[in-house]
Image (tube, rainbow, N blue to C red; front, side, top):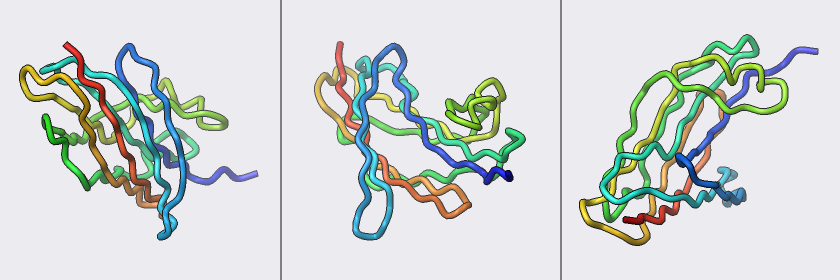
Length: 139
């Protein structure tokens, strides 16, 4: 059996449990919602994207576009080496760094409260996902 290339988005918050919900919009784009936590004024990686071949090499560099910027901070989108957190057949790739895209959020200095970011990720193999990240910023 031949395995097809794999694209996936993983959003992580350091030291915090993450909850998510997945739906599809009228255009057929997968809609994902994540909730997480960040410390006020601290740069926090809130997401990372990768696209894998069956041999765990990079299929393509995911592209991340900001649809809605945070109102109380800033978002950086960087191309860098990431460790995937894949499941199933691709779980074996979780120990291999691959070129991917990482997203970092930093709240405005002193801001405490709710913020939100919406991004669109495309993976080069036809997969497109919109991700809404709801962030609870604490002291």
